Length: 183
Image 1 (spheres, rainbow, N blue to C red):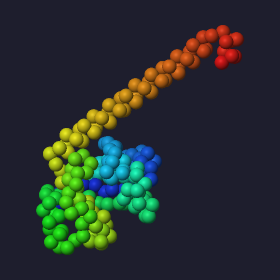
Image 2: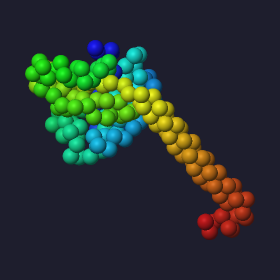
Image 3: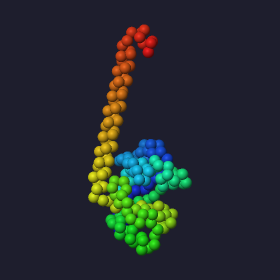
């Protein structure tokens, strides 16, 4: 029923700062960043073999992730298992009287079905279950396309700004000395 470890989630106070270690120092690639409004987090995905490291930065101070960060500090938040059929796993857990945070699956990042198991039933570890949906690959492609578009637009704005700045410097340097002193 469990296919693999999907990801290990790590709570961080600032995503950009954390990426300095995970991407720059450790060398994991950053595939995409996604804002999850209903969970109040910005999420960065870094593949590591068959699984991902998922960095979570709380964006809403009242979110569960923000409360976790305030109480426990940065560090591992949960482990996520990809399952074949999330409803079958949830039913089996209910039959075994394992406490669930989500009695029914909700929709998480990428459009996947997710549900959390309460740490009281797992020996203290928050566990997430995830089932891929048909929409997930398309949604992930759209997220990557949007990210590329934003990067391209940002690059165009940066390039235009630099050209204007350099043009201004060149014009300033082409003026007579008396005009330069006034600037």
